[in-house]
Amino acid sequence: MKKKIDYDEILVRMGYFMNKANLSARATSLKLGYSEQFMKRIYNKGVELKMTTWLEFLELVDITPLDFFYLGTSYSKEDKNVLDLFNSLSADNKQTIIDLMKKLR
Image (cartoon, rainbow, N blue to C red; front, side, top):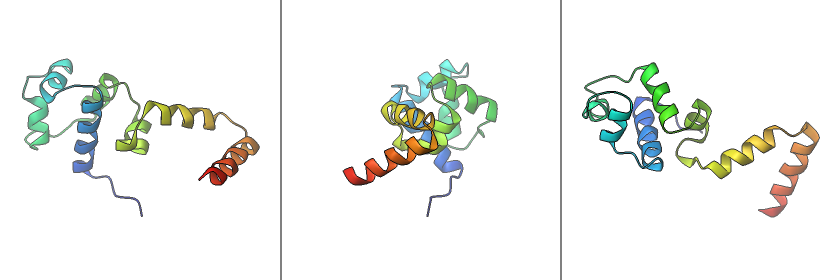
């Protein structure tokens, strides 16, 4: 069963993508146009994350909402590239790739 994504999981994933982008909470806050303590206040739940801020964050760390929710902390550019390539295939070719992957396990 897949883990339910709640507010705490959103914060965990944000931290993961900040680390991948080599951004501290302070640097992230400043790059988003807020005070140095902004991200720290979000993590301490003193300020609730707004959707517009979250979308700006995604742009800052160069990911899409799909990357954030679907791949989450398993994200890598290589995985995303494979998914993009896979999604561009015909249904028959997708099945061929799936069959090949099963044989390679």
